[in-house]
Image (cartoon, rainbow, N blue to C red; front, side, top):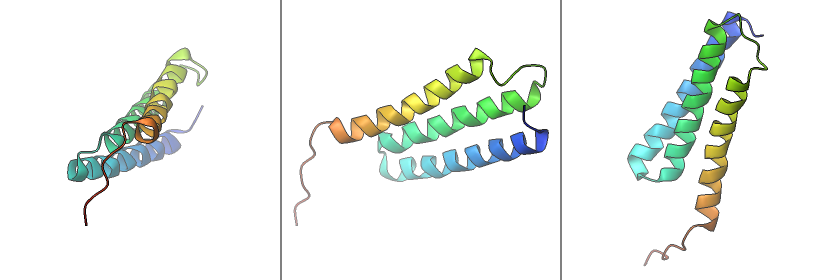
Length: 92
């Protein structure tokens, strides 16, 4: 179990990183950044839930499912970027 101060710092950090990737997505409209932003927002929500519910254990399946979803989004974004359809080279 983490302290409330540490949980708050983790929520803040996750949300700031999520906002950073969301800004890149708004600029480029590349879904790669959107998946990363959603992943960090999910992790922030998981830390918020962990900090507010002191009676539950960190070993609860809910936390593992949230982490699985978040890391799955990251893996999907990387796979989609590297295995996706070939993009045409920009003309000079």
